[in-house]
Length: 218
Ligand code: ADP
Ligand code: MG
Image 1 (tube, rainbow, N blue to C red):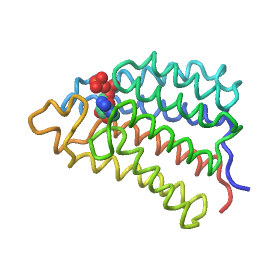
Image 2 (image 1 turned 90 degrees about the horizontal axis):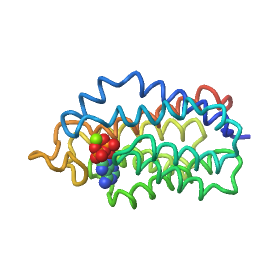
Image 3 (image 1 turned 180 degrees about the horizontal axis):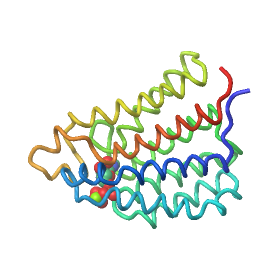
């Protein structure tokens, strides 16, 4: 049998992601001070800390209502572009997964792809525009490619992590089209996008969580 992430286990992942985000405050804020208005980490961190504080309530929920609750919480707690984008991503995932009980190799792909599409629609943004979308886009693309070529679950999750990292790293050369970095004369070229960095952190944590805690075979 393949991996299955229960809603309660998803909350355990969120706690790890929240801890990782919490640790990287100075780094992300310094990055966002160069190309944005410096508030990305403060906003995102307050959203995750809110989720961590709600862990007991979230752990008792079924998958789709839990994803909806996470989306609404992030939307109201984060503010800024990220709040709306993460909120839209989780709300869309909740709708797409209303029949699902757990995240497995198929429903996790649905989750990633739905979140990506919702963020692109809400942000009116495309991959390659130097945003958080770039990490998610490359992660979902690598996931699909590994799945379609018949690779095992461990390889698929490792491919997802590598995709996220490549997407993040490519934002360094990209010119911003949307968001505050696009107001700068050089369009942020030479700097990583802070939203892509924090998106990548979450995807890396999710990948590590699956590899270390959920997947025992393969
Ligand atoms: P802002 O300061 O623009 O309100 P945040 O500080 O919450 O937003 O987050 C900044 C990050 O949001 C950027 O680094 C970028 O990754 C992402 N971002 C901003 N605008 C958009 C957009 N229209 N579509 C996708 N991502 C965006
Ligand atoms: Mg900002």
